Length: 421
Image (cartoon, rainbow, N blue to C red; front, side, top):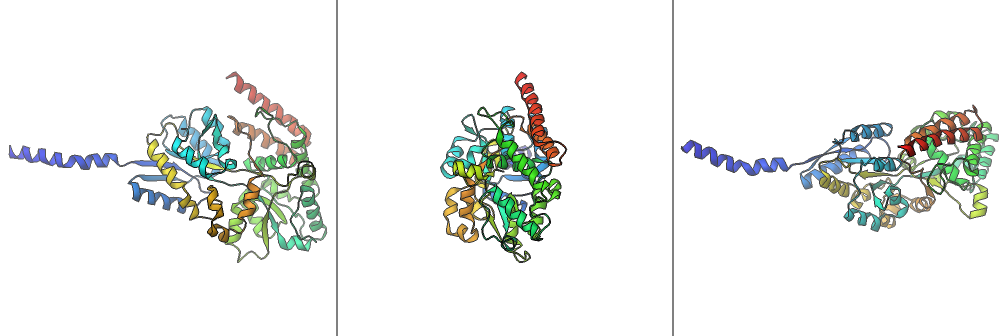
């Protein structure tokens, strides 16, 4: 009898510990190993979150190119393994239409809109709701090799695209570089980023007023004509057609390009390698065409590469997931890692960031010229079609006009199939 009583008392005493063990949560986070905040920085923040909350965060770090398929395969199971996911702005419409994402809770929605500029958070908005917490505010800048610029006979970055081409021609004629320009024109998403801002530089967009793709307007053709011209004149290095953004950064850092456009991470790489970079460099605003500058008084354009933190609708730990997002994306973390532009506007005015980032004012100006790629539920498919035909034109296999006509025809077929579903 006494033994039974002892066992009963032991069980009673163990109940709090059992319940406590059951309450310990673990959440799974899909991040990436590429640009933006680096894995050790994210791991450190996850460790701090665990110390404060007791919630463990398991993090996966795939490459950018793999994430979309990983997420689609996970979401289709309707029992998502991931509780927090880093999403590219170009996936938002697809994931919303498929019912894969939770809308940002009201308390975080208010925090975002009170502290982050619309130029950033609107990329994650649809149907009056936000679907991701802005985390990476990346966009492209023009990078200038100042030594080569001066040797070419110039002292200031180009004010127009035509002036940039003329400066490149001067550098080529002076024998400074066989190919003065280098960029990421590989048949991947980077090519569409380039084509998007170039179309904007000629005063247009890739869509019509209803948000549907429309390539048969003057601006996309002028943009593609300009790209082909740079290759034909030997101003753009033909190896750009095989280069991603990381290789583009390496080429510039090696001193083998007068100008390139790239994401803000290139500036961070240049700063870190300042002792080994044997030339003077500076970032500048990406210029527009002379006709746009004269007609609209617009002097710069760029393209966004924003990414945000979302919670899948299938997550079983939504509250903890949003709490972790609030913790990770908060101002304190970004203020401690100023090698990237914080999404929080008030941090831009801090003396610390002004001293650590002498180009913060330039980035604020460039941000106002940022445009985004089309927001479409079938963007990935549309992008692949565009990549194919633009790439054919750059390889001189087809004229720019014919390339855009063929791309439009294929994209229209995709749109029609979507409307019948």
